[in-house]
Image 1 (cartoon, rainbow, N blue to C red):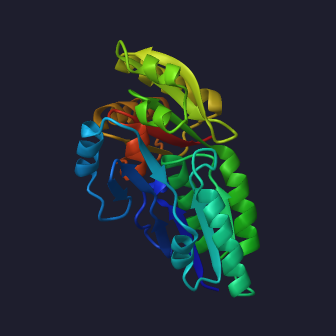
Image 2 (image 1 turned 90 degrees about the horizontal axis):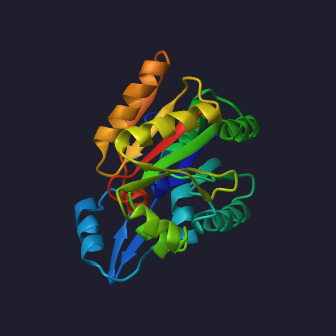
Length: 276
């Protein structure tokens, strides 16, 4: 049986090590310009366009045909999308699933609403790869990945909420607060896949202390951590150092966010996916 793992570009992945994989790009629309979140996207140009643009910007989810092309000729597809609370990507993937299974009887597509984005999606894709490489049946993979997603979480720290507010993801009042007096917000993806604000911080140490506090409250005990950032590798590294000081040999990876996550995290933002 030919397996394939597919995600939208909110996972910040273009490839994985050992299993067949495809990334389906979301789109960032800034005035008359459109940036496709694929391997060719110019992040510097996107940031320049955002800085110069005075109006609203937006994002667009992949179309059904884009998902179908990504599924190709796989017998079993495991598909991970950004939270359905923020995007229509999940609904688009579900429509593609229906068409694919009707077109090819006997094949299957399992679509996972991550209820999250970025590094939590990375954890889910990594676990899918482990399950595929183990030789597990599609039924076992579905059961195991459903259980795994109950034990992953996303925390974040953002300097600005402008793009989230412009797209109706947070209130304008919350966005205004985050933009003044050096205040950063710390929050999490809720069980419903929505953005839940947990704390307001001034200063890096407050942010780091808050993130560590909430990691422990969520049940983190030294498992995997994936940290993405938009121009804030220093804080990401500082968080990783503090995690390592508290837990023996945690599996931590830090990387720069790609276009979609950079758009929503904005400059200085960090996203933390963790096993708990």
